[in-house]
Image (cartoon, rainbow, N blue to C red; front, side, top):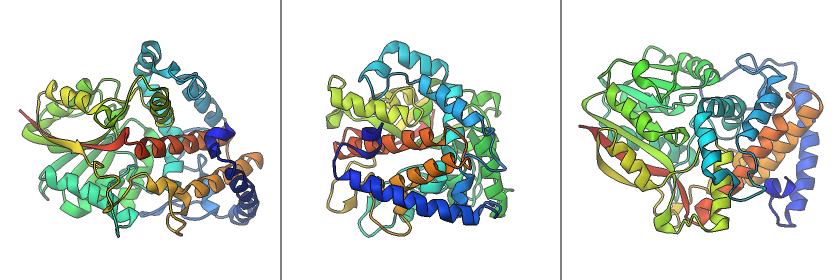
Length: 403
């Protein structure tokens, strides 16, 4: 676990020591803040060290304090053998088990990680291509606005957000276009949190989150309800994209546009399913992100076409990831030591993990919190490796029109 969390580089032992010292400082700060009530902010929650005491344990949480440990244990069982025996979670039986249990897997995953995502990333749970001179937040907004432009979203449009998280992109796209947007997420906690944010921003008449399974969208919405739909790094959780995309198709008006970014491995850039190192990275990304299995771009396109869509455009939005004009999408996980980006860096994650360890030891954080933090830290390393080797992208762009 130590190798997974901190890497095999001996120099990282120094970071471990510094992280432990940081934990003592953070623990002291948390105790000084502990009597202050946690309140959500429309722009950024978990904005202070004191707020970290509310990770996985706040008034909106759906897991009881004893539920975190049980939930992470059940989640890890679905990926039994991951990171210990390469290839174990890529067998047909293992994938089929996760596809069968996808509702439990994805819901449990987001019960566990939503607070950590907000703590380290913000309210938009996705990556983005980033130009030199562009801030992380600017790149996130640009990626979201690009989807709105390509799908011709207007102030009068009714739009579906497929797998909306806590609704960060929904609110940003509404501010950009003025459109009426409904988001669907399988996770009750995200619905509670996201609707609070919409209300805090005064846009709850135009943006709302609803709990639902995006594999069963026709049960949730009448046919032809929406002018456009988008999915941002969400349908990678689907056990069957054809079922998911067919549901989106039925909810759209004739000619409606469906646009999105999807997580895929990249055979055309060198991903080799027979290469143990590539499989190790792929499986690490899957276990740390609640995925049945990663698809290829061709499989995504085929699922769209078989679901009643005409694919108008598709490409890897990170195709210039190592251009001298771009900052690699994964660089945020390596990170520069800025005040705004510290939590996302390798060192920042070590400090966060140390803080969570201290909080769990002090019984402020629920039991199991450390295991969740370790899971996410290990996966960050896999994502960086996948991006650096160009065998994986989180930003396979597609634009499709309902026939």
